[in-house]
Image (cartoon, rainbow, N blue to C red):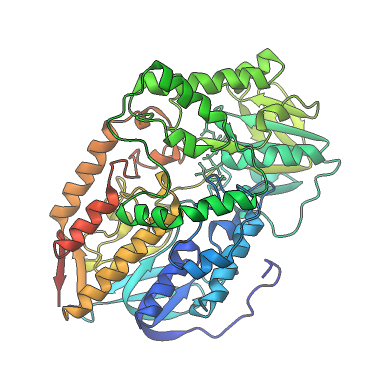
Length: 538
Ligand code: N01
C-alpha cells in the first residue's frame, strides 16, 4: 500500500480483547502470530499504512540491512525459512519490506491490525485489571495484556536547525522517506548528518545528482559491505548449519557470532581480527573482536585500522583527515556498513562541509547557511537520526497503577526489569525494551526471544489462574543497577551516541541497551524460577 493510498476513513472500533499489540514491524507481527496460535484474541494498531515497521518508513535510496540477510530473518518457522530466498548478502529495503508482507500474508496477520492509526492513551484500570487503549481514530479497546512492539528507532528527530521551516525546496527526513521516487537528476542536494542513513544513501544520490553537499558534525566509522548477489552455494552452506544455528539461538546466542569471553588476542591475532573488518562481514566482524568495547588496546587497534583505510580510500589528504573518525572509540557509536561511501568523496560533485570548521548558522529559503558560505540547494535531506529506544514509548500517554505515568517514571532515563516490563505497569510488556540487548544484537533474534518469553509468561499466568504479572520495584532496581554496572565496564560512555540518548537535546544521558553476556539465559532462568522478580496476582 502506498502512502498516497491511505486506508479509507473508518468507524472507530470499540472492543474487548485479550491483548493489544502496538506496531506491525517484526516484533508486532510475530507477537500477533504467537498470541493467535495460543488462542488469544488480539487487536493490533500501526501508525504506518501497512506492515514492516522500520522497513516501511526508511525508504531512502541505499537502505538495506547491516547484518547479512540470512541472519536477519525469522527462525520460528522452517517452512518460512525454506520458501524465502534472499537475493543479496545485505538485502535492500524493498526486499525486506516484501519479506514482512510475505510473513503477514502467509500467517494471516494483517487482519489483526488497524493501520494509519496511532495509539495515544494507554491506561491501566485497577478495578478491572485491564488496559484501555485509545487511538487518534477514536478507537477504544480494552485488553488484559498490552504489548509494545514499537521499535527502537521509530521516532525520527524532528529537524531542529534554525530556519528549517523557511526552506522552499523539497525537504525530506530519511526516517519518513516519501513513497514516490525522488528524482535527483540535475539537482543540488544538501545531506545533513553522517550516520548510517546518510552513509548508505549518499553514494546513490551522488551518482544521480548534480551536486551533493554532505554536512558533517562527527565523522563516523564505516566498514565496507562488499555486497553481492547471494550465491546458491552460500545459501546451501548456511542451510547445512541451520539446525545448529537455531540451537545456538535457543541456548542464548544473540543472533550474531560472539568471541569467547576470556579471549585476550595476542598481537598477531589482533592484526588478523582488525584486517577482517574489511572482509565484508561489517558489524559481524566488529563484534567478533573480543573486548572491542572494553579494552582500549583492542579498540585502538581496530579504530586505527579503519582510520588508515579512510586515508587510503580518499584521495585528497585534507579531505581524508576530515572524514577520519577521531574522537570516540570504534563501536561505541553504532558503526556503519557502506557501499562506496568514502570513495564517493573522490567525485567532483560531492563536497564535504565540516561543521566543526564552519557551523550551520541557519537554514534559509534557498538552502543552508554556514558561518562562511551559503549552499543553495533544491533538496534538503535530514539524516539526523532518531529519538532512540524510548521515543515511541514516551510519545504515548501510558498510565499504570495509581495513575503513574511512564513519562514521569522515566523522566531521568528508562527503568525496566529485564527490558521486558516496568514496575507499576502490570501486563504491559516491551519487546526489545531499554535494559535488554536489543540494538546491540540481531534485532530479529531479540524480537523472537522476547516474544517467545512474553508468550510463555502469559500462558503461565493464565494456567495459574492469575490476572496480572508485574515486575517488583526491588527486582527492577537491581536490574537497573546491573545494567548500569555492566555499561560502566565499557567504553560506551565516551561517545555521544543515541545509545545514551546524547543525540536528543534534553534527553537524560543513560546507556539504554544491556551489554552483559548471556541475557537470554538470564531471562530463561527468571522464568524457570517461577518468574522471579515478578508478582503474579489477582
Ligand atoms: O542516525 P544517526 P541514522 N546538525 O543518529 C547528525 C539504524 N540504521 O538515521 O554524530 C548537524 O546515526 C549526527 O551528528 P553527531 C542504525 O542502528 C540502520 O543515520 O550527533 N548534524 C549524525 O551524524 C543507526 O545507528 C541502518 O555529531 C546533526 C547524524 O546526524 C541508527 O539507525 C541504516 C544534527 C545522525 O546519525 C540511526 O542512524 C540506517 C544537527 N542539528 C539506520 N543532528 C542499517 O544499515 C544530528 N546530526 C540497517
